[in-house]
Length: 184
Image (cartoon, rainbow, N blue to C red; front, side):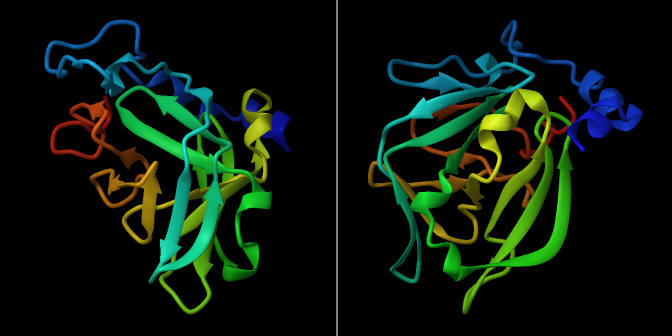
């Protein structure tokens, strides 16, 4: 399936549409201070980076996922998206929703609802492009729908209602999803 998706003209067109690719920070971007990262320094295509900080995802106090072996996907203009290995996710709490989405870089994502909780709380890629094979089966969670924490800091959701990036105090933007920042 990956070879078919990679050859798809719509995917290739979507990959070419991005103006900013992390090679040079645009004038409107904030400059990061000490211990901060600018989303405009992240690359496109995205990069996967190991992160050993404690990641916890809860719903009404109940643990849904916990790990210190997450990976971050870093993509120009977006706050990092954290992916958690399936072994560190209480998968019995998740239900496939039947909804799918497509990322021109990663592949086809499956959406998950939470049993006894909100809809569309997580996603994972089972059909991935070769460059992102290491993400296959890992779970990402929407901080707008669940209590997501990074080393104890409560994560703020990426603006826009669609994206799953994790905004923390170390991230500076502006970020995709804020007014005037889509399609950059």
